[in-house]
Amino acid sequence: MRARGGENIEHRTGELIAHAVRAGISDIHILPEHTTYRIYFRVPAGLKKMMELTLEMGERFISYFKFLANMEIGERRKPQSGSCSFTYQKEQVELRISTISNYLYQESMVIRILHAEANWLNQEMEVFFRSDYQEIERLMHYKSGLLLFSGPVGSGKTTTIYHLLRKKYAEESIQVITMEDPIEIKEPRFLQAEVNEKAGLSYETLIKQSLRHHPDILVIGEIRDEETAKMVIRSALTGHLVLATIHAKECVGVIERLLDLNVSREQLKQSLIGVVSQRLINKNCVFCEGACSIYCTHFPIHQKRAVLFEILAEEELKNVFYQDERRPQQLRMNHKLRKAYGCGFITQKDFQDHQIF
Ligand SMILES: [Zn+2]
Image (cartoon, rainbow, N blue to C red; front, top):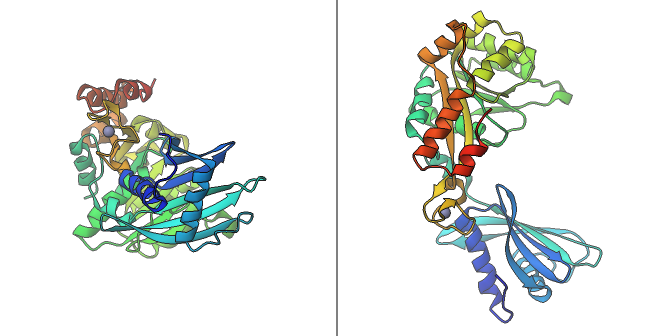
């Protein structure tokens, strides 16, 4: 889209913010590039170019946002920051605006949109197969034991855990203590502790301290060493429901990883309730005929993707422990991918890209 000149700046900047809010975008970048200004939206894959403006129009956009955020409009050399509110269809979002200029004193601006965070967490999670999610919810009924989550960085493991905890918390009064590095989702109803190795607050120390508070549920951000693994198992065996993430490609890999960290097979048999592995994948959008485009306004951004779960629990989990001959590891997640593809929920490309070999 190439922008025309003489339009009303107030209207155009308003349209820009409204578009970003509708799409659930968190950052808008207005950047000078040689002889033009370009506007980008930050999307999961990076920056997506949305609009090109003349230098003059770009400067007018920036000046107008500076005016809205009570920043000094004439000051172009020093970095500035400010904030303002914006109302779109009765919903108010907060804008945090900052500028910095290059050696030509051309300013770049980043507008961060703070959506009401609670909104999407209170909604149902976007999942491909609801029955899988319900199976995990059932595993949350155990009073003690270990429930593990794995998946690549950015696959939404923490989001899954918080959805489960909030649901559970809404049903019964429980005490939840989390230990994370760092805390990604703030939840005032839980006791959230942050790992700080420099201050001597390792996962191990935090787990020891939190056990004195007799929590119902303990959440451990990540099991990454032997000490943490042992503490996690001990907590799970002493009457706590423990949720933790661990790095592995899929469910069977999680068990192997724990064995590598010198947890015994016997300890695992006694404590492990289930293993969940997840992928966050673009939904096949019927309107876009493929993965949803940024211009698609049929879904806000957090609904453009959904989670695919692989779950290992109950009988299947026992089988893994008692079988000497194990099935090929990649079978289970790939089977789920094939099912999602077969149902038309994901594109062929995403089906292929997420296969485990
Ligand atoms: Zn779409």
